Structures are given as structure tokens and as C-alpha cells.
Length: 115
Image (cartoon, rainbow, N blue to C red):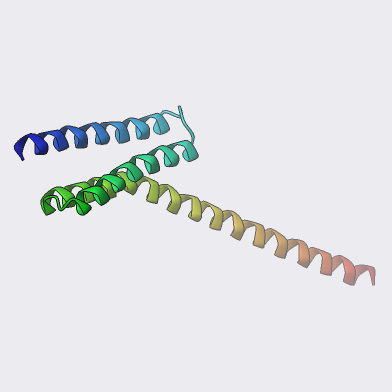
């Protein structure tokens, strides 16, 4: 069991390093938002599959909890990116609505002046 735990610790370190490397590439503008999200999602999927396999095989609950925490830690930046994208789109949508309103007011004023 100790050897297996050491293997999982090494796997966890490797996955965290990979995740951090992906985030660094994104922050350094080496990859775009979509690529970052896609690569982090792939890491989460891999850990999720490992969790499912460990549950099926009846592995130690502490190990499964650690893997779940790892998956959740990796997914956090993706969730933040999704949230930021939604907020950005909402801001753009509100600006467009204001511009449409201004144009409608202008159209009504011009129609009234012409009529």
C-alpha cells in the first residue's frame, strides 16, 4: 500500500505541475483561453477517470478524496475563465442594448422632426 501511495503522490505532483504549466503558458500568451480550458479539461477528465476506477476497485477513501481535491483544484481556473467570459459577454450585451436604445431615440426624434 505504501508503494501505491508513493506512486499516487508522484502522479499527483506530475498532474499539478502539468496544470500549472498550462496556466503559465496561458498567462504568457503562448496559448489562448480556449486552448487553456481544453487542456485543463483534459487533465480533469483523466483524474475523473482515475477516480471512477479507484471507486470501482474499492480503493482507500482517503486516496479517492485526494484525487477529488486534485480534480477540483485543476478545474478551478477553468471555472473562473468561464465566469469571466460570461461577465464579459454580459457587459458587451448591456453596451449593445444601450446603443440600440440611443439609436431608437434618435430615430424617433428624426421621425418626429420629419413628420
